[in-house]
Structure formats: C-alpha cells, structure tokens
Image (cartoon, rainbow, N blue to C red; front, side, top):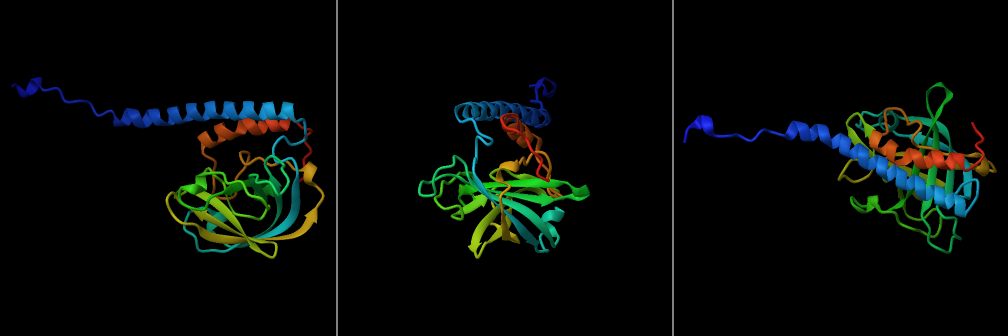
Length: 237
C-alpha cells in the first residue's frame, strides 16, 4: 500500500471543544424555560408575593470569615467580618412537622454599597448527595448547599452551611469530588419583620472573587424574573 493513499482521520477534538459550550448553553436555556414555566404555573395556582418560599424568618447576622483557603476568591480566602441579612424558609411553605426543602438565603455586602445573594437549600453532604435536594422538618435540620457551582479563579466551587447550635451556622466550600472546608461562621442576631420586603436573586451579583457560570445564569435567571413579575417589588436595601 502506498503511504500516500492512507487516510488519517482528522482530530476533531478542537471542534468538539468549541461545540461543548454551545450545547451546554442550549441545554441551560431549555432548562431555564422549563423552570420559568413551572414557576409561572405555581404563581397562577397560588397567587402570592412569593410563589416559592412564601414565608420566612429574617435575621440580621454577623458573618465572620476565616483566612487560609486557596481558591483565589477573596470571599473564601480572606478573613473579615460583615453584617449580613439571613432568611430561613421552606420551599412550599408546609408546616414544620411535614418534610419540606428548607432554604437559607444570605445577603452579603459588596463594593460600592451593593450586595450579593447566596441561596442554599437542604441537600445531602456527601460528594454525590450534595446534588440532591433533601426535604427536612425543622428549619435548622440537615446540610445546606448551593447545588450549582460558582466559578472561582482556580475552578468551580460549591458553598455549603450547617447549623451548629446557639443561633450559629458554619459555612463551607468544596471543589468537585472533595470534602467540605469550613471558612466562616454565621451568627444570627436580631429577628426582623421585613420578610415580605425581601427578594433574593443569586444571578444578579456575586461575592468578591466568585462568578456565575453563564449556563448557570441562563438556567436560573428566567425563573427569578418570573417571580419578580408576579409580585410587587420593594427594594429593601
């Protein structure tokens, strides 16, 4: 056989690498439309200021961050203290005797007087179960995580939290396939009556050094826009 007649298959890896983000973006947009439709149906069936997590307990709190992490994100790596707003709620709003997906929302200050919202829900704590929602009874039960990752300079990270008693929570971060690393304590102080005035959206802004992946934004932003349209928006801060 003449070597010149041998056909060498072209390396299509570069084209596949270019195609992957487009596929992920399309899937995220499709998923976002599904979530948006679901929230819209729920808002029609149960007209309320908040179709999901309708009632919550709001507190001011002190977030104490401890230095030492190496994620490249200032929020996780650098020490500091911030006054934050915390809301504990149940997704459907069922009585505490009935299991429901619990939510922990934390509003942290950022530059120029702005803020970023962290939204966590009850999940498992393991390397795989952290991706599964886990209904609980009491608001303080179980482990909470962001389910979806943030982008740090060194790669994707997930955020987590767990109640440790005396109105105190510990916050943690994890990389894909790793255990959780504690980086902060969250100390609840004064309970507030501003529940109906608060509206959280993690896709609008992020803590220092963390970013939202574009597919993450496309997946979640339409649902939050539907929630905003279904209620009278009052800016609490």
